[in-house]
Every structure is written in structure tokens, then in C-alpha cells.
Length: 376
Ligand SMILES: Cc1cc2nc3c(=O)[nH]c(=O)nc-3n(C[C@H](O)[C@H](O)[C@H](O)COP(=O)(O)OP(=O)(O)OC[C@H]3O[C@@H](n4cnc5c(N)ncnc54)[C@H](O)[C@@H]3O)c2cc1C
Image 1 (cartoon, rainbow, N blue to C red):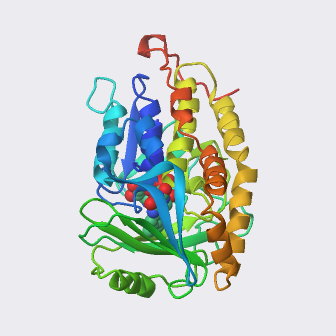
Image 2: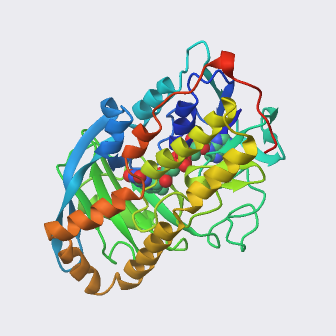
């Protein structure tokens, strides 16, 4: 089978297929962990649940939120941690059984598109009965746009439902995880500073794709007395897309799994990647057909639609109110431990860490594995 993309979603899928006996080829245009795709912050509980703790760089029990009128401190009911991207990818890859006798293989290739079960790359064509697109926001293996009806493939800003983010990674240290909702940096969006032991990840995200983020990112770094070194940026989908299309599975940003408002997409890429991997594993073990796996995974993703719509509405409200004192009032409200506990627990429940253990059982070995069946 082909897993296209070796970042969070793709590696979570490969992890679930470890020991299945199937030939799993993971494709990416870069070496494993070579290109960091985010500020690499996520709930510590998720790092622990996946046994990725050794990649952890720094943990935070509170968020310091700045608005033009007030600085609020939100005590979290669970901590948030920054981690090292290269190390985390290597850990997930080792959990995928890489190097073992029934190993996943990593191939470097740039994927350009797909016809049916044939994936086109700059190194030739590949065919497989099971194909996953974990290629990020561009949804490269789709032939139908972002599922919103409007933009045809390829998905392109500014028309597609995308936010944008840019950050710098200067050497430095800090004690606080800081956020800004401040129109002096971005009119509709937020800015951040995430320390990671020996570097600080400073960036700006805009909910509006037409708004530029480079100048405010450089300015924020300057305000923090940090040089604007080591740029990293990308588009960020902020609307759920179909998780299956044309018998292909989509997970992570390619399926719009990044959460609107917070742009937290690592935890969700892992969560939906695990869900997708489990369905694929059932096919490889002969417990379900491809059609059943597609239907179950598609329904699982779609079942989160209401929560994603809720987050998108919250993004729109915050985006519209950025210049007003209303955002400061909301930030002040979260200073209450009771309010922040309630909000952050519900927020975590969208993709809870208990999901990792929920599917921990490993399936039968190669000897008992029948061939993949395409029909239901
Ligand atoms: C500046 C910024 C900061 C962010 N910070 C955070 C954060 O701190 N916490 C958080 O939770 N989320 C954060 N996000 C969001 C997060 O980065 C994404 O939601 C997350 O990376 C999605 O994971 P993924 O595996 O779906 O896709 P990606 O991480 O985007 O991985 C896609 C993979 O596919 C490969 N690929 C893409 N196209 C091709 C191709 N044509 N051929 C071959 N390979 C290809 C890429 O090389 C990459 O390895 C941030 C986003 C940005 C832009």
C-alpha cells in the first residue's frame, strides 16, 4: 500500500500498520524530518500516549495571552509542550517497524497527481490497491477540489478555505508560551512565541489568506529582541474536507483536519492518521474490505463536522472582533480556572489522547493475512 506524506498523519498511519506483514511504501519529497512544518507544539498527553516523550523540548502549564488592552494568564488543565520535529518523526518511524523484517519503506519522490489507483511521481508511476493522501493542505491526490464545491483542483489560495502562517526559529530561550491577539501584528488571526529549550518559535497566523504575515513576523521577533532567523511557513486549511474520495483515504491537513481558530493540526493529524491506519489495518488483516474501510473512516471523520463548524464559527467571531475590546473581555473570562478548565477540556475532547490506547491491540500476522479485497 502507498502512504503519501511522511509527516504527522502519514507516520501515524504507518505506525498502525507495523507488523501487518503488508508492504507499506511511504513517499515524501524530503528526507524524514528534514522540513519542519509547524511550531511543533502539542498537548504533552499526546506525546506521552504515543511514547514520544524523548522528543519533548519544553512544557508549559499556562498560556500568556496579550491583547492591546490586557495580558491574561490562562492556567491549562493539561500542559502543552514543544518538541523536536526530526526526533519525533524518527520515533514514529521506528514505531512503524522500519528496519524490521516486515518493514515500511521510505522513498523520496515528488508526487504530482493520480489516476485511479496510479500515483504519478517525478520518479515514475506507482500502483497500489490502498492509497492514502497525507500530503498536507494541497490535497495532491484529489481530483475534486477541497470538497466545498467551489474551487476545482488544484486547491489554491486565496479562494480555498485556507489560513496562512509564518514563523522564525531564532536561537534563544524563554519561559512562557505566549499568544497575541493584537491587530498591530495581524488584523484577523493571532501571533505566538513558543520557546523550545534552545530556540524560540515566533510567528504570525492570519485567518485571511490575502493578508501578509512576513512583515509582522519580523516585527514581533524584533519586539522580543530576537533576530528573524530560520523561516518556516505554510497554508493551513481551516475547514473540514471529505476524508475519502475516489477510493483514496485523506488524513491530516489534506482532509482539513487542522482545527480552525487555534490552527492546531498536529494532534488532529495524528488522531485521524491513527483512525485511518486502523481501518487500513483491518483491510490488510482481512477483517474488512476496502469499501467498508472507506465508509467507516469517511463516517468517522464526518462525525466531527459539528465540532469543526463550531471552531470555524469561533474563528470568524474572533477574527471580526480582533480590533475591539470584546476579545480582551473573552481573554479575561478565561482567567477563571473554572472557565478555562471547561473550555480546554472540551477542546481536548475533539481529539483526546485516550484514542491512542483505544486501538492499541495489534492484529494477526502475515500468515493469517488474506489478500486485499476491493469490493464490499
Ligand atoms: C507556521 C505554522 C506553525 C504551526 N504550528 C503548529 C503547532 O505548533 N501545533 C500544531 O498542532 N499545529 C501547527 N501548525 C499546523 C500543522 O503544521 C499542520 O496542521 C500539520 O503539519 C498537518 O500535518 P500533516 O501530516 O497533515 O501535513 P504536513 O505536516 O504538512 O506534511 C505533509 C507532508 O507531505 C509532504 N509533501 C507535500 N507535498 C508533497 C508532494 N507533492 N510530493 C511528496 N511529498 C509531499 C511534505 O514534505 C510533508 O512531509 C502550524 C502551521 C504553520 C503553517
